[in-house]
Length: 176
Image (cartoon, rainbow, N blue to C red):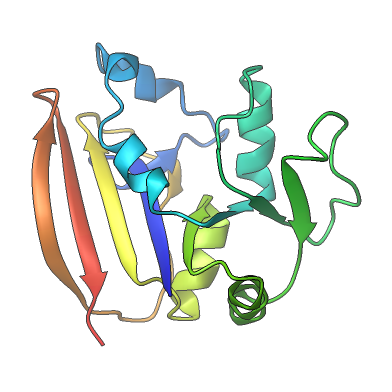
């Protein structure tokens, strides 16, 4: 079983601007012309645990649902799945350990953990096994950070790649 984080940050470690915007991701030319390892990554994932704010951001793009795996929206306040997404997502609540245990009992072994607050909760519970972070060559200066008041966790470097000549993607594995 693995809980894996896969996301992009600015050089200074932000995942969104102060308003939750991610328009800055489009500062990299040709970003949408290459999957940057996404296809290989998602092919190894059994299910996705996504925070509510990230889910709402994805919906705001107005595109077809992009995730080919069962998706669980982590929320204590969302009461029902928006119309048209009933067969794509399910709302779930609980601690990171409860969620991991429940999804593992359903047969999902490799979970993709997405969304700033959700990732922070899983880190605080020491339930992140791998981090794959792609650095975008931009300094936001302020915004929503990937890491906040997490306890100290030791990871080992797995690999680093330069993608499309501008992005630096680094993979880490939790050292236990």
